[in-house]
Image 1 (cartoon, rainbow, N blue to C red):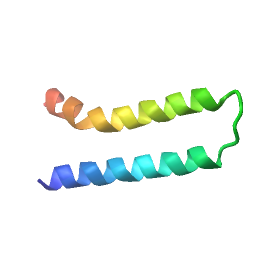
Image 2 (image 1 turned 90 degrees about the vertical axis):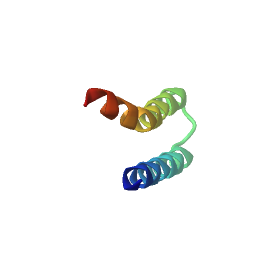
Image 3 (image 1 turned 180 degrees about the vertical axis):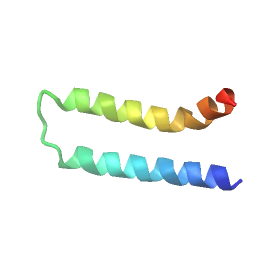
Image 4 (image 1 turned 120 degrees about the vertical axis):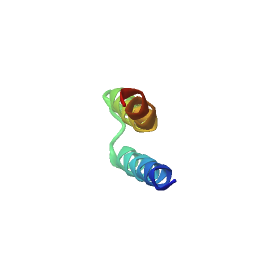
Length: 56
């Protein structure tokens, strides 16, 4: 159960940090690429426990 709490906490912190960074960045042509990279980071964070369990 502690692992799930830690995973949710990490997910919340990452989403909060990336959202804050996204707000601070100016709107440029690179914006859609940055959002894509942020989405990949969030997806990797969500999928990490599944990948970890399958690797054991």
